[in-house]
Length: 347
Ligand SMILES: NC(=O)C1=CN([C@@H]2O[C@H](COP(=O)(O)OP(=O)(O)OC[C@H]3O[C@@H](n4cnc5c(N)ncnc54)[C@H](OP(=O)(O)O)[C@@H]3O)[C@@H](O)[C@H]2O)C=CC1
Ligand SMILES: CC(=O)N[C@@H](CCC(=O)OP(=O)(O)O)C(=O)O
Image 1: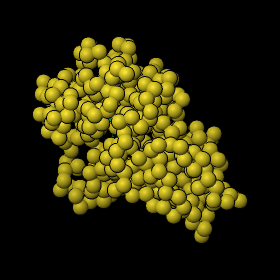
Image 2: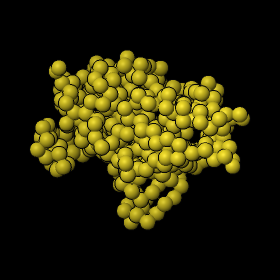
Image 3: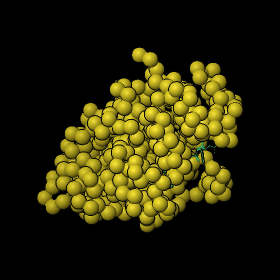
């Protein structure tokens, strides 16, 4: 099979680097373009010496110009760009016939008014919202197969939506009682100059932020509402912790009256026993980021708190992996008819 010509737009950032790490060695991919305004003209290997001697590592970064990207013959482009910027380039690349897998939040919400409410500016390309597919392969595999434009989910949302969807679909928990606490490594904030993200500022610091209305609530509530068949509103408390990467999430919700707690395990098993990247830890299992960093796995465990009638779910993923880059590659694999695991079997 001929390899799929692929571009990474915004390849010098953290998720861009994760995409480079995966796509330079993906057996069905030929990386034909990687963009960065700051690094244009330099070979990938000069900017990221870790890639030296890998095939393709001498490719030079180019400017993020849609004509230049299309001229490389790229059939697909991953966008690892800031919100707002991605929508514009996505539009231009779709017009040039490429499939687009966008890692930003620009196409995750189906309602432009909610985008404006949470992102503080009008949606840059509302005409594309209807056709964009929320790229959570465990929930939307069929829609992803037919998609031209994938909105790859946010890092926190992936860690919250995947444990909850089976329980909401089965009607096991009361949607009004959901509380999610997440702890994220600092790479979740991107590779930008920001005093609050300096080593000395973060290294001995653990703190909540973004409460009570972090922007990820918009997509979390959209997806949970679809699963529950009713409007779901949750409490979400993100925290920044002093590690490079990884998200640990703990969710609690009240079981509906009369529900046997064993049904929680059964619902998770029924949803994910065949999913190659969801690892169920069972009742009593506690997910740990050390087992998932640099992989596309999400680990999920659960407990029953019989004193409060609550279920407690834990999940762990890599924010740059299942929360971003490798999950985007999983969607790419589905679009191009490859096994979901192609290029992603790492531990
Ligand atoms: N970090 C994470 O854990 C996750 C991030 N995401 C999302 O993925 C996207 C990328 O995130 P991340 O990699 O962290 O971001 P970074 O800030 O680390 O990287 C951004 C990239 O975009 C390029 N870029 C920035 N501004 C522009 C512009 N105006 N025009 C063209 N290129 C530009 C940068 O290169 P240069 O400036 O040289 O052009 C760089 O390559 C974001 O939308 C983010 O929200 C999603 C899930 C998780
Ligand atoms: C630690 C940290 O700052 N995390 C980021 C979320 C990660 C991210 O990049 O958001 P998207 O997944 O929507 O692109 C934040 O809270 O804004």
